[in-house]
Length: 106
Image (cartoon, rainbow, N blue to C red; front, top):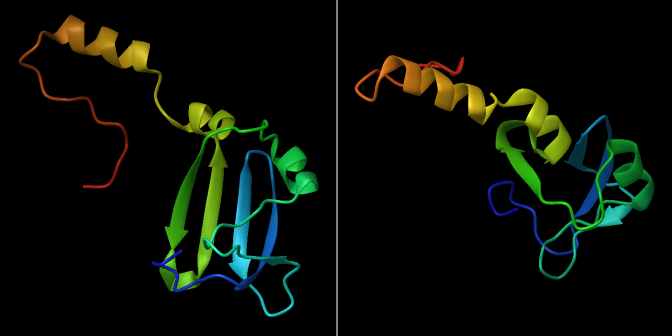
């Protein structure tokens, strides 16, 4: 929250679905950051996103647009390469080979 300049009492709007929740600062937002600058994702949004109770999530901050993305494990599993495939590729090429490209920027 520090990267966004948000603190306790900041009003935010939370929306989302399909494994991703988006949190934006909003003067008319219905959710307020807690005293520890944490955001509570409303139950209806958690259900829409498919988040399980106590599910770990990945937070992605976009400070230049003042947005926080909350990504659930399901969407991350779809987006990331399968670790078994990476191990198989690495083993078939030998241990001195270059790391495989995952499509990231250079």
